[in-house]
Length: 195
Image (cartoon, rainbow, N blue to C red):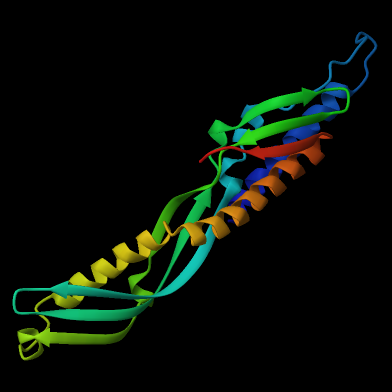
């Protein structure tokens, strides 16, 4: 994480230094063309625009057979990464005199979801039918843990949860873009499009 921050700050310092050198008056230079931010500069900050969120949930899954079933309830922990695809960033309005520009960005989307089985705590296992009298679990616990992981991944598709995480990712991306603009002396505004 510190490498990403260091990389982002290095980009900002480099851009700022470039601005200073370009705007330095010289005897053979009559007029300085104004610096305009480009989408390639915005795209360079794509790693900084990712948001990692931790999530915990209580999940119940069931494995049914011909002669019974087994149900497991577990407390699950994991994390997801949301990000804005800055390759889709477009500068839609530029005003060099007031040094303002407007950037259109796609909505953040879930990039990765990671279920952490080592932090999974089994709350209850209920056997039904003949499965209740058979010795051992016959591999059903491993199957159930796999299904719990799948359900955890699906939980990030929940619209209410996704909206809250998208808002956090949007505000983080806006903050990064605004700071970039401040570093180069511009006001950069964000408009959000579709994911």
